[in-house]
Length: 50
Picture 1: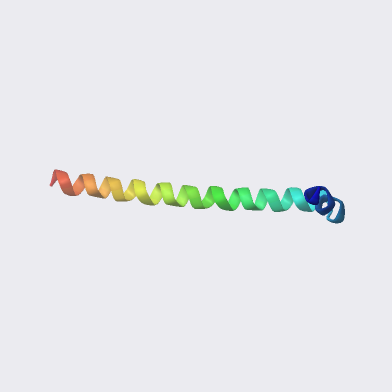
Picture 2 (picture 1 turned 90 degrees about the vertical axis):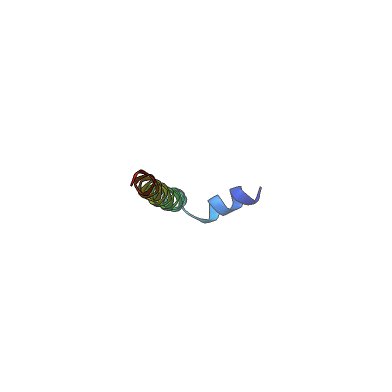
């Protein structure tokens, strides 16, 4: 009920753009976290080898 009212008040393309922006931000954060932990893991393995 509340979501329908919000959609009527704001244009549909704005809702799509906002959702796309939020999804892209989450994806960027997830990629950064994965890359960071992967680098940490690789460095940890290198220190174990030497």
